[in-house]
Structures are given as C-alpha cells and as structure tokens.
Image (cartoon, rainbow, N blue to C red; front, side, top):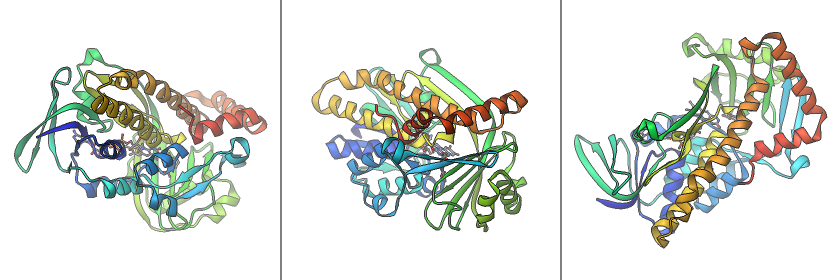
Amino acid sequence: MRTHVVIVGAGPAGLMLGRLLELAGVNTVILERRSGQYVLGRIRAGVLEQGSVALMDRAEAGERLHAEGLLHHGVELSFDGDRHRIDFNALIGRHVMVYGQTEVTRDLMAVRQATTIYEAEDVELHDFDGKPWVTYRKDGVTHRIDCDFIAGCDGYHGVSRASVPEAALTTFERIYPFGWLGVLVDKPPVADELIYAHHARGFALCSQRSNTRSRYYVQVPADERVENWSDDRFWDELRARLNPETAAHLQTGPSIEKSIAPLRSFVAEPLRFGRLFLAGDAAHIVPPTGAKGLNLALGDVAALADALIEAVLENSTAGIDAYSTTALKRIWKAERFSWWMTSLLHTFPETGAFGRRIQRAEFDYLTGSLAAQQSLAENYTGLPD
Ligand code: FAD
Ligand code: DHB
C-alpha cells in the first residue's frame, strides 16, 4: 500500500491531523494500537480553548460541540477557602468551552472518511531520513505502507519518538512528587464554573462534563494506589479541601470512573527528523493544572497539517522546515504556564512553610492585580501563535 502520510496514533492529535489532511485532498492512513472502544474509554481532558473549537469547526466536526459544550467565561480560584473569580470575559473578552476529550475523539472518529486501522500491533518506522515506510501486524499478518511523510501522534509512550536515535534528541523533564486522583460522577457540578483549590491538605479541582456529570480531582502522593480510595474517602477528602460553603453544596454519588494520573513536564526537541514529525503528547507533556495538554496537541497538528498540505500539494518545504521551531515556541509558553499553575496550587513537601507563604503571597498578588489576572486569563484561554 502507498499513501501520502502515515499517522501513528488515533488520539485527538492523530484524528484531527488525519481529518484536516483528508479535507485538503492529502491521503492518509492512521495506525492505532488499541481498539476504538478502548480509545473512547480513556477519561482525560475537559476544557477547550477557542482556537481548539475553531479547529473542530474547520474539521467539520463541531456541530455537537456547539450544541452540547458549555461556554465558561471564568474560573474560581480558592486558597485555604478564600475564593476569587477570574473573569475571562471582563478581563480580556475571551472564554473556554467545557467539552470532554472523549467527545472530541468520538466526533473526529465519526467524520473520518479515510482508513484507520485499529489494533495495529508492532508498528515500526523505517527509513524516515530517506524514503519512509511503516510496517505493522494485524491478525497475525505483517503489512507494509510506503509514504512521503510519517506523523508521530502516538502519545508519550508511543513508538515514534522511541524510533529516533538518542543522539538526535534533546529532552527536558520535571517529574512532580504527586499525581491527580480523578472521579467521574453522574451528579450536577458543585458550581457553574471550575474551581481550582489550594489547601494545606493538597490541591483539588472541581470540573464538569455537562450539567449532570461532574469530574473532580484531588492531589495524592505519586505512589498512591487507586484501590486505597473508596468513594467515601474521596468525597471526604475533596470536601476538606474546599471552601466550607462550596463543600456543603457538593452532590456525591457512586463513581463511574476513578483513576490516578501522574504529573510531569516534558519536552522533546526537535519535532522533525527528516520526514518524521512529532506532535501532541508524543513530543511534550504538561501537568494538567492549566488544562493545556489537549489544546497543545490540537495546536501542533493544526500547524503540521498546513505544513504537510503545502509539502504534498504544492511541493514547498517552507512549512515543514519551520514547523519544529514555530511549534516549540508555543509549546514552551504552555509548559511555563502549566508549571506556574501547578506551582501555585499544589502542596510541595520539599518547600515547607516558606514555600506555602510564597504561594499565599502569589495568590494575594494575583487577586489584587488586574495585570496578573489578565496574564492568567490570556494563558488559560489560549495565547495567540
Ligand atoms: P494520546 O491521546 O495519548 O493519543 C495517542 C494514541 O496513540 C493513543 O490512542 C495510543 O493508543 C496510540 N499509540 C500509542 N503507541 C502506539 C503505537 N506504538 N502504535 C500505534 N498507536 C499507538 N490534559 C488535560 O488538559 N486535562 C486533563 O485532565 C488530562 N488528564 C490526563 C490524564 C491522563 C491519564 C493522561 C495520559 C493525559 C491527560 N491529559 C489531560 C493530557 C491530554 O489528555 C493529552 O494531552 C492528549 O490526550 C494528547 O493527545 P494525543 O493525541 O497527542 O495523545
Ligand atoms: C479538567 C482537567 C484539567 O486538567 C483542568 O485543568 C480542567 C479540567 C477536566 O478533566 O475536566
């Protein structure tokens, strides 16, 4: 088989890239290690920037999002129970959309016309410095696809970045000593907007998926096990970290999903190796505090799609030559913001009482300074390229 672009991974990055390319007339095959059902079962991000919503429209996949997504014009920050609303609309005239990654993935799957091969095992990348080809195994048979370009959209643990010789890659990493324990529940959200809460017991986040489904997180030690957390223990811990008035409004119920995600900052440079490009979590990870991971992945593939369309249809390398440098500037800004939100809101065992006083001063500065609030609002709702 031959195609213009083989895309490895059918998460949001791979599916969006595939869709933008097929709409432009560029041929693609997506290879995904898991089944479609498995991919849809992963509960992850929940907040879309305006640029991501516009991209869903460009992909002609925005219909349900506009009908069911919830527009949010601000978020609440809480520090030891003291509350402050960051009003995106008043500060900078922008907003975000609450719409789950699962739904983004489902909508992109539904519109895709070209081939996606699920349960493709042992994907291997060959000769991406010359004439690239990719092999995979399906139902015990090995297949080969020749192509012009390979897009590695296969997440942090994927094969694409791992196929690059170590000497060609520089990586930057920070692993945080904690994770997020998340619970999904079919109960109305505790508040209209998201609440990001710092507390001496640790960070907590009140998020949502719809008017009847909520998503809550609490900071837990990195080595914590989900089996140690009954629903009752989770709800007690969440209440303890919220403002008492908010806690009193919390509607609890049996969890329909419960999992722990580790927190990490990671960037691999560059993003291009001959005819192989990395995008999304394959290239970088942010801690989830700033709600940037999914948005960053979609930003990468928007740029990569334009570059590949130019290369395949117009035989111009300007876009693919610029991709890595341009994308990394945007990525590092999101890394900085995610690191900053994480540093402000979590408890860090190693920084002690001094660290907590600095965090309190940062919160007081933020709530007293319009400039600081504008900076948060700009970053949270999405910086321009
Ligand atoms: P992925 O969604 O990881 O998709 C990569 C795809 O490639 C997967 O379907 C995978 O099965 C496939 N793949 C992997 N290896 C291979 C292979 N060898 N061959 C073929 N296919 C392969 N972000 C937020 O903003 N908020 C959150 O709350 C949040 N929570 C998260 C929780 C977890 C547990 C994780 C892992 C991430 C979370 N994120 C969150 C980050 C966000 O979900 C990601 O940034 C986003 O999924 C990136 O999309 P992607 O398409 O680049 O990667
Ligand atoms: C969600 C996750 C985040 O990391 C975040 O900052 C906001 C919302 C969520 O899963 O809903």
